[in-house]
Every structure is written in structure tokens, then in C-alpha cells.
Image (cartoon, rainbow, N blue to C red; front, side):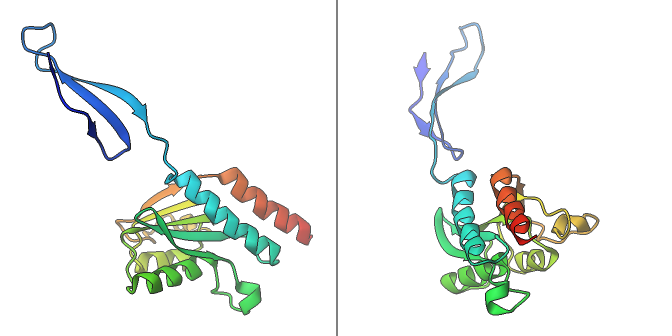
Length: 185
């Protein structure tokens, strides 16, 4: 039996493969044995927790509690939260602030190698900015059933290459927003 050396694959699984020779019961088959799975601090869940910290800052400042971060090469390059009340600017959404900050950090307008983590599904305005920035990946927590970009499901709002992941820490994200609006009533 030949045993190949240990290799790493992109999904953070370490595998050891061994080739079974033709004279054994299974012809030329590779059997993959998972040794262990590396738990990463660079997961969608861990980055969403950072976005939730930004949302808490907005909550504490009496802003609608939406937080966002931009990650590039597993490094947070931008952090933001809603500033619409503080700046008296309806466009000062967390996503807009984070996109602008990330573009300045990278000294370029395209974020195709970046991931935006945001606690609430982006509105149509923010989705437009995400499209123009050609964002590589969008990860959001809670759906926005009143103003979320998915309400325009018949049209492609985001850039065609943008990967979308939803529902990460959705309960925590929606609870913060619900608590904020209950406090307001």
C-alpha cells in the first residue's frame, strides 16, 4: 500500500489519502481519511460577532443598531455602524460607511477580494453600492422584510460575481433591532 504525504486543502480540512493498489479489492481508488477539522477564528460566525459589536455601538448611540465590517485576506480593514442620526444623513448606513472606509484603506474603489459582514440585510441603496464596489462576498445576519434588497427579487441588484450568505447569527442580529424599536415605542 502506498501512503501519500499529508496535504492541506482550501476548506481547512487536513486529509491523508492512500492509494489502494490494483491487486486489492478496490481498483485504483483513493480513500480519504479526515484527521481533524481546524476550527477557524476566521469564520463567518466570528466575523459576524465583530459586526454585532459595531451594531451595539449604534444601539448605544441611539442609532438603528446595524453594524458592518469589511474583511480582506482574513483581516478586518473597515468597521462601521449606522450614523444617520448623528450625521443627519439618510445615506449614512453602516454598509455605506464600511464600503467607503475599505475603499480608502485599499486605495481603490473595487472590493472584489473583500467580504462585507452586516447584521441586517442591506437595503436597495446599499445593495447598489455593493454592486458598484464589485464586492466579492456579502454575509448578512437578519433579513429585512420591509426594505431589504431581496424585495427586488425579479432583478439582479448585486454584482453577478458577489457571493451571498444569509442567516449568520440571525437571532442575535434581529434581537438587537427588536429591542431597539421596542425601546423607542
